[in-house]
Length: 372
Image (cartoon, rainbow, N blue to C red; front, side, top):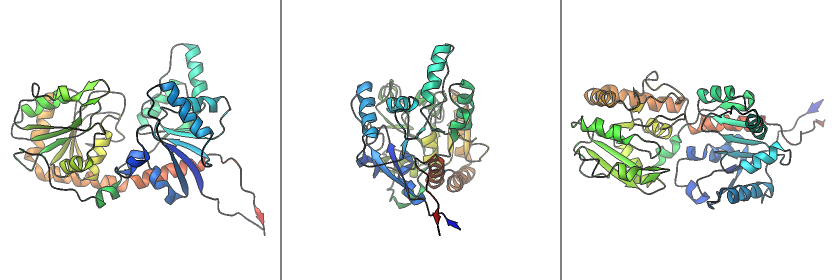
């Protein structure tokens, strides 16, 4: 009779483009895509810090060197994004780097009308063993691109670190001049449609809104958009936070003490506003959101909030007025959002899914059966 021993723990190396190791203790672990929770599933993780050099070529060389000549052994590369790993992926496509590469892909893959470019893209994407995606729509669109095998794409339910919020002592609201404790709250800095949101609340003087964002994100100057020249209504309150977006104590206090989360975004082909949505769900807040078809689920069908078409000021006014006049229903939406997070969209289910995917990859050397 043959007895198979338990497999030893898997060792992986995690790469995140934006955060240093010292940042990790200050934020919920969904920001690092389950990497901090994998050990409970038999996956040991070492971290590769980002390289701050602005030159993309230097950054990619430095990242590739770090993975090819590691300070400790590992079996799989796991990344929150493919950005920065391009050279390593190319080396794997060429057969010069042997370890599997698994990354989160935040948008659908694009193709090209040029046969040569399409061929080169297919060759490059051979270097990925798995691409994890937030929504089935991204998988479908990427599959139609013809630049990657569909079996390399997999939807994983990303979700909030509920334990993080449970252990936080969130203080009372810090904003001044809000006339009512039943105020709306907008967070986020990426592709937010602040002009539409401002017009909507200008037309709803009975409802206060607290807007928290950073000075700038990419080419968007949020501070200029939300300046006193553009925001004159007394029920609209703006806080510009540091570039890391979250002085987390202030940020979480504003969301926790709010009545409802508003997520007003510009139209883009990815999950704009998803982090804010999950933050609201974790804190049990109802949401009003731009109708982003790239969200992993329909918030109205789930009963956790209301959807509004892009740039629809009148639609926003109606939604704000409806929830203001139906506070019990709004509270039920918040409860359902929290329940959905507990049941399906949370860091524990995320980590379990990622661990299963990593362990399912071909191991470098198979364990032999031990005769007894």
